[in-house]
Image 1: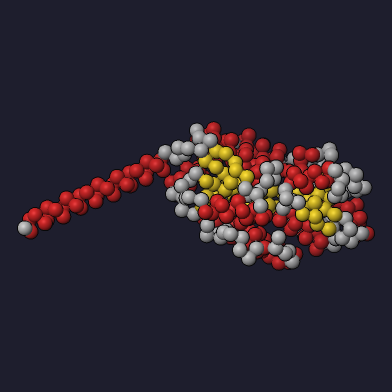
Image 2 (image 1 turned 120 degrees about the vertical axis):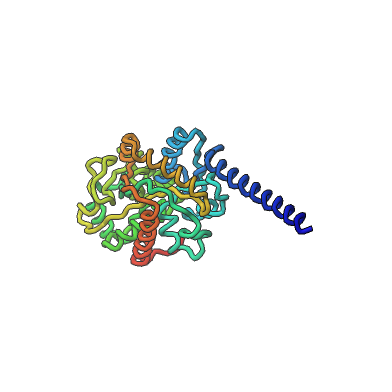
Length: 327
């Protein structure tokens, strides 16, 4: 009887071991085959925003590199909260990515009581793709041709000169201008396309948007300043705000490709390795510069996580100093 029980137990353990080995093998195979179907990259902003422009570039490169379709799914609304919350709820299988932004992952936690996700706990960052400077521009019929002239106009008519604002970071640029005694009045739009249409139609005299979005209409709108530390190839001849008398006026947004928490580390590693190859390509560096982005210094996973935490603190301090209100 004891011998029979022992044999039965040994058979059961052997079956369990075989099942476990099969499960591990299947999981490893599934991860090794990634991607075996199309991969969506959620962009929590409308088409035409700087994040959307850059993400479409990277989606095309990933499609070529990995042999599966990487496609952009725009999920705008609530200053990026709708799309970001959808990404947070997605299955952590590597087939849903999100192009995170400073707006969604560093600013919204301070602007909304409950944005619908935890910016730190719900995502794993993969790679910092680009830094995103802003441009301060005048509409075609606005009688200013320099930042100094715009400042003089705003100070002569406090809160009477409207400025189109398509994003929370654009709003922060506006609030920072106000701290430098440039009293413009913000008019919020759903995205870059709507804000640009208003500026081109001279419905608003001033536009604050990313260089990437603004550069498409050079020659129509009049860029007066950029918010980067140095001048940009995408807007030759346009001086920085700091160079034009607004001391220490530097404000740059960013994008980080992310995955929902729980995506297997093997998939994260492969995605990160492919993105690093893409970012190191000379053609990518030129394309980003031509589009109005600045290249970011490469960071390890640990360095990137620490950097995002620091950025979150910095943006939180800027929001508090500017007394920005929730959307």
